[in-house]
Amino acid sequence: MARISHSSGEMRLQDRVSLVELLDAAGLLTASDAAAIVIAVCRSVPDSDAVGLAKEPLRANAVWVDRTGRVQLGPGTMPSVPELGRLLELMLARIREARPAHFPPGLVMIAARASGRIDMAPLPSREALAAALTRFAPPDSVAAMQALYEGLEATISAGAAVESRDAAVRRPRKWRAPVVAAAVLSLAAGYGAGLLFVQQRGNSPITDATEVIVSPPGRDMRGASPSKPRATPAPRAPVVRPRVARSSASRRELGTPQPLVDATQAGSDKAFSPSFASDGSAIFFHAETGAGSALKRAEPGERGDLHVVTILDDSAKNYHVQLSPDGKSVAFDSDRDGVRGVYVGRADGTRIRRVSGEGYAAVPTWSPDGRRLAFLRAENNAPSVWNLWFLDLGSGEMTRLTRHRYGQVWGGAWFPDGRRLAYSHEDRLILLDVGAGRATSYASPIRGRLVRTPAVSPDGRWIIFQVFRDGAWLFNVETASMQRVLNDPSAEEFTWDPGGNRVAFHSRNRGGWGLWVMAARTQ
Image (cartoon, rainbow, N blue to C red; front, side):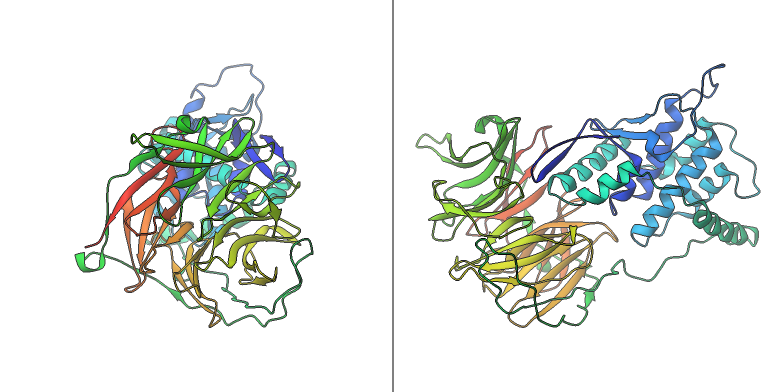
């Protein structure tokens, strides 16, 4: 069982995670990851098993990935080639359950051949199996395993799927051999006829309707439970497959990332979640140490050196700080009351009050006029499902914006008109028109890959976002096209400066989490 450290509202992994946990975190594992895991297992034990050693059967909860990217086996586990083939089949079946996927036919055939489910010459050894899978593995398998670990840690640290993951650890899922066997039998039939194929379910990975709900005002949320929305769900939002921008007319260039704030400059271990002051003079962020998470402000000193000031540092874990447009207040999320929620206080960290009511809420963003806050909120009856809400700070009235049935939303980035927001849900970038009550979904530029942490430029023409494990992409709102602008797979939580000339984000580009910035040049 993976060891979990937790305090109210915050959970983080320690040391390693089991394959069960990775399989239950829908959308994290890919076919190339599955190949890399089996290769690592093959090469972790000798081909000539030691005589006289007790052997344990290979189970998914006996395979671990640690924070350094190593794959480990449980004590006494000496898997045979058929067991490894069945493990690979299990992973491929679960990946397809989570999201439609088209696997390379050769990969499926190797899995079937290793497991013995088709009438072909068996693979003679684990090393032979590893060699056969090499062409399907990622170029840097260790980095891919580290990214898996960090992806699960990021999801859990944000509060996602805590209950379902804990249940999965206590109750490992049974291997679904009948489902896999049926798929392999159909493949075997195609192979015998000289045709090998993998069926793909539909043309789009989108399976959940984007229901936009603009509800009537609720009760005062400064201590009351949210009122139940009474609005009728909007029709299914159209899903658009964006094109990749190739012409210079539709592209925008971003410069080489430069260090902005190193964690050591902030007297911390890690620095996350930057946001600019409304005049661009300072950067706000949260800095983590073993003792907690403090809110910080950094600005250039008179001599050009970086001057870092602590806004709030107490026993709570405080995150995602943003300065209000008028510069007088800050919004952030914190676990100070036991369950993570959204708070507002003065810019100096005083007079803090919870504004999101009961239940889990996080990642606030100010509207351009400073009168409303958008933030994500967990469903009371499904804590692993997040939806988007906003709060009128003057009246305390809360409005539900979305009603997704699964997964988590990220963002809630305002357009300058104050009517529209951009957010992401699973593998979609979604533009939501609050006034009109409609939304348009744009599929991930990499089919089935998660989209996260979008940020809208000050002129409303561009949206920068993370494609999970593929770096940063830029969306042109006018042409509905996307371009890849940064290949750093750890870069996320982007923010534009008020002039739209710079983009800041956090990354572990140099081995530790810090803040970076890159220039945004218009063609």
